[in-house]
Length: 419
Ligand code: C6P
Image (cartoon, rainbow, N blue to C red; front, side, top):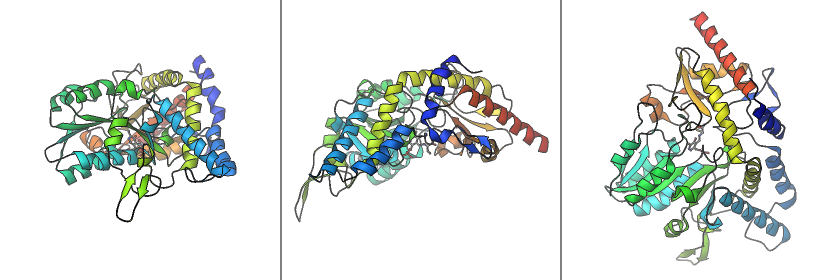
């Protein structure tokens, strides 16, 4: 099935992604691993190259022309990203290496100076290790206690359980917006408002939502939101932390060094204003500017258009995947209209290891992920050491899904024969 809509979006954008037009093991590449990292459009690659060819200089440091140009482009990118998530001000947007570093920034800066023994941190069992391990480290250092929100029988976030965990002891709720393994879209606005009612702060891990959904931090109301550029068409090595201005102002710096200071004396220092207070050292200037180009690119296509198209792809993927015997999909499959499911499916096939599946599909030019997707506690709940995962983006086509489904069926048949 090739939809008419496919001709107007995937077909239109595919020429923007040179990497997609190559053979892998003699077959046309079908890239179904965008949740791990997305591919990059030409405009992003060109922006990076242009920066290093024409504008390369350190930022905020020199009065010479190149430094002025680099600084303007760097701060211009901050404005673009801030606008992209509807932040009130660019001062609320801190560049980090990735989402992981952004969560660690909040954990070490806010967590260490605000949490005390007996305080509670609520996270969920579906969190990525990046939103578990930093809190375990901080809980150990401060004596705070971690409470985990469990899943419903439908394998979605159990909101009743979440409500029951909330109390005046809750100081922080840190929740993933879109699970990278279950694919569910969690109701972050409602979660934020419930957490605020007991006086807790809220951090949203938006790594898997910012690339696919229109995000409005003011509407969500969260105190912090984190994402990685490499999942949203930008290069690796760049991510961001959004924080409410008042909350960021009250937090001490995370790293010390150049850029983040006001004045330095032999015995003490003062720190600079937002956002620079949290950006110690020379930043990833080219990557930031390229992230700005990625945001322009996504905005020009339109996040609503991307989301609608991905909903259709997701519905089509699930319709086909659920018909294959022996396939166990993780996460709710009762919302197949795509509305509460992101464009990914983690699954296991009875009797076949996920990494064998991935290797055999790679022989057909199809890239899917296998492993624990950095959600070991979640996989443990399912008694699985890992799973295979297909994840889509707006450059994927219905035809690619057809080829993946066919190759998967053939792989299962092959294993059934030799077993
Ligand atoms: N998930 C995946 O294949 P970093 O590594 O900092 O860019 O992103 C960490 C991260 C945090 N939260 C969620 C929900 C994520 O999905 C990820 C990255 C990749 O699913 C790599 S494990």
